[in-house]
Image (tube, rainbow, N blue to C red; front, side, top):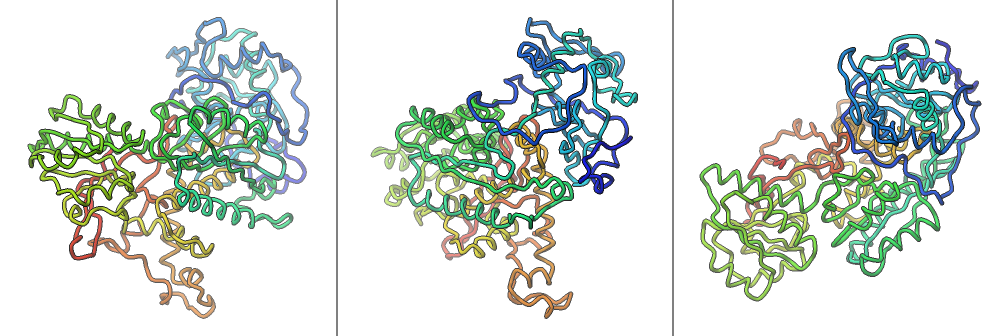
Length: 635
């Protein structure tokens, strides 16, 4: 099949798109909740791409009623009058409604997806009807040279034939997973109109040369923590932009080089003030003054719910903020991606652990929860109470106060206490006796092993630990710490700073992979598809990099030419292995973060899904280590 490429792309034709098979292959995806179409504020400016070649004849004009008709079919598998769309799959299997909605496979953006070796083709107007030379999608996350196949433009007639009979515009048969729909001419016109405008223009915040982001900071964040956050965030963006020099672009693929899609990043800092009830109005004003493509990272204290709701309502992606607790509705949304559920996950991890002990004849008769003053503390305590319903464990909740000391002193050996406290409240415990039963803390709330736990408590306390164990995770954080050193930034808060670094590093990889398809929905779709593959590949590359003597010399500053292959670098020590762990096993990681593994699937919005129960070892000898008492617990 001839490739419809602009002259400047001709030389790269075989590299970019020439290896695809003749017929697009479609794989059924999991259903997603029907929602609004590609979100974009109607008052926001839209930055259009350079003009492309005209549309095919026979495709209806952009009639709002037709677009609305097609949107309903595309997203929900039903018509605006309530009738379900029906289709036949695999020859004899009839399905209807959400089961045959286009969004299931082709996603909200219309730019398709990859499932294993099967490619779900892009079907937005630029790809289906147009001859736009910049319409290029990377269709294989493992191979950067596997791009979408070019084909002749669809007309109304050929599109109708594809939808009803499963015949590609080239005359070949589409994958049988693609439904053969029962559609009227009006239905086909509506789908045509909707696809024509789907992902047709860059989302707000994007221009030919720049892309604007914002980060949000809530007013209850401590000043020192905010300072550390902003220094790390801004350093990453400065470095990213320093690699962008007009005429001397640093590219990661031939497609990026030909299309010249690299852009300078601009960052706005949206610092909120006052009570949470006023945050929506503040966010609306920030966005109205200067629209952004996405909210990146972010730093929250007691609550993040108003920011979450604003993002869902406006269709503005919020990308891996550092927050104590994700909102309860996080998993039902689309535009917010979190590292984890926060303390709500901690509660479920501890609940699962206590239930396991019950089943192993190590019962806990009563659990006392000592709850701090913050909303996140109360939400976590309630979540743990819910997790233990029907377990046989009596659960109580008590605020941290004057009667706490007497309550702890009266505990029995078959009772346990969970402290939902942050670092400032730990000082209170120093003058109190250590309870006789099991003692648990949330490492997320206290700051992990670096917190100032009372010395007398360290031999008994256990941590609900949502991170990789400290020494084990050092292999994954080597590049991050080397970056801090290069940028002359102090390691003040390993958890926070590494989260910020990862969020922007992964964002950069995702935006690069998007090429010229800078649409908000597509950003989130690529995030789902890329995360686990990207992390496994990056961890392997970094491990290989650090055990290479010549590469160690580059990072250590030794002259490369002075170091023969096979000679280890004396200046770049290998990362310290965890007790009982070989160095070779230490390099076999799936993560470049403080988390053991991050992954997303379609519709998932929390990347880390478990935690350890851990405790200190050798605290009296001053050589404190954190050791897992359980396997990784996924509630």
